Image 1 (cartoon, rainbow, N blue to C red):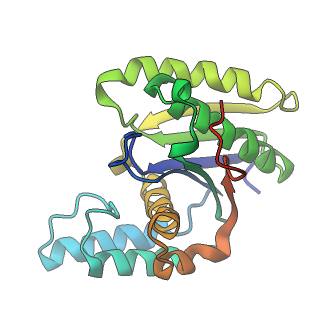
Image 2: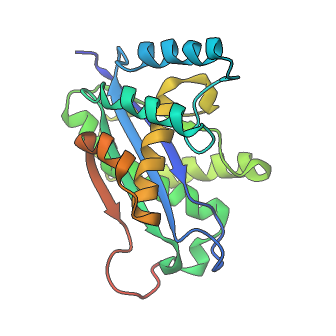
Image 3: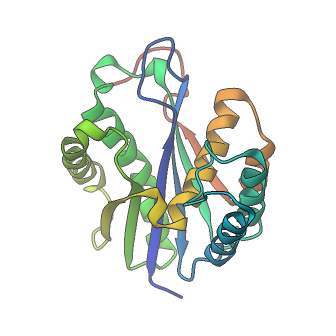
Length: 223
């Protein structure tokens, strides 16, 4: 077994906490090991799209047309063995106003998710975990948020067992099929919570290990 685990991360929903923003914000991780089972099939299908006349640089669930989206979900569903999907669900209206700042909200939610997921990989035999997120979504504040992520993770993960080696990297989604798989899985989980749509979610559900609604009790605001 490969002793290095990969965790690919993506988010869905927006950072708008006003009534016009999305009700939920979802962070999803897809954990796997090399060799990456679905990647050859996705690469082959991307070239099918090019030969069909589509300008497909990479797959992005929200932007792909319904036929492409359906086929990508089929390919992911055919290669669920070895994938673990975990999601952190945030009902945004319950978020304390002090936590809504970009430099706190995204890093701390990411920390909560990784605090849960990283030990699972260690328990399964990983000696090192490489965490890859899509490029930080808030462009103008990227450097500050990346610094905040490191600080939040240091705080959140200090209670983990010693000896866990991990790195966190920020790569463009187009650079890795793992990030594109995470994008599709996150979109499916988000649509389930935001709109009650489960068609695509049901395709990846066998690999879903957790959906943690972090503010699931009551209606008070948490901090």
